[in-house]
Image (tube, rainbow, N blue to C red; front, side):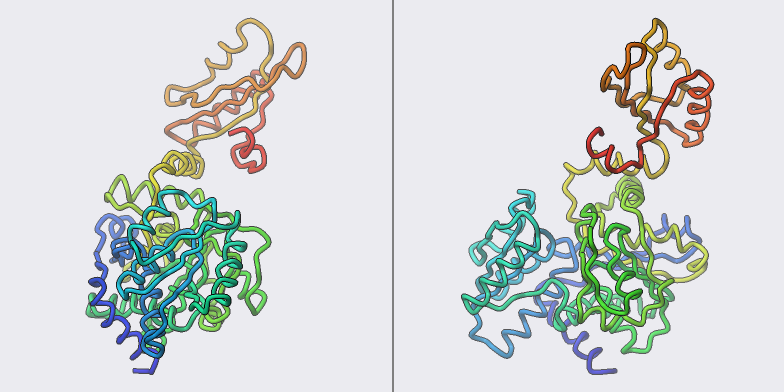
Length: 415
């Protein structure tokens, strides 16, 4: 094996002092749907419910191997990386200062504090991550601390490669296809580098959220680029710029093997796994599984591994996930309806609804004219085709309307 492969295997062995290998599970439900032998690498079942503990552990381990007197480590993160660093600081009995945005949910702050205990200090600073990162790096320079990057570090990449080491050891064979998410590129570059190093004939598909497709942008430009805007819903993979070291590994990825998935559609997979399998996945953790919908023909009859990268999901977000899933499936729509101000108009409209249609929201916005008023109405149904009949009846009845379901600007203010 190559030097990188040997280092990844060594890192995997060292991790057994910290936690056992995450499970590899064959999934009968997904295998039946896609006519393939589908396995899940359950990184949502590590001690911190994500793979991030691997890179943090390996990076700190390597620093302490060469600089055993290093006492202070720093990171900037609002999520999984923070929890991984906290856990590893406690394991090595080193002090960690974890910088988090002031907007970080209390649940994530509490979990980070639990994992690190007395070994960590949490500093809340900055409204946006870039501000938090700048504060963390300034602190490192001032205090002589070691900065633990969430992805753009060779030792982090090497640590994330342990996912592939375990996967092959557990399966006893190399899979035909591996599907994994991309954020900053630490996991994807680690797995890619290891499979290349052992000369595995495995087809790789890398999956990005549509609102944070930094790898696709970098491949098109031939170098890492910074996205102008990023949709933060898939927070575990919402990164504006892929890492330089990670892109060096991924730069030869065929563009048609990088898929972009709409954020709302990811929610349908999250709900399906929760309701059918009892598996709790965060949005980034569901990316690889959701991509199966687009890869049905490529994976048919093959042995496929999806990396379920994380399960740090706050159930307070469940209503939003359900809402997004319904909209993605076409089962819920929002309209601004111009309602005639005459007796019987509302009753006439209600008569247009079918037996499977339900009003989920009804709100008068304003009386726009003496004879008409604007109404915001949300409708749920059991079959997306029902909306075709409803809009046809509204047209025939002379009810002017506008579908604002996918109008992000109006939705943000009205829904």
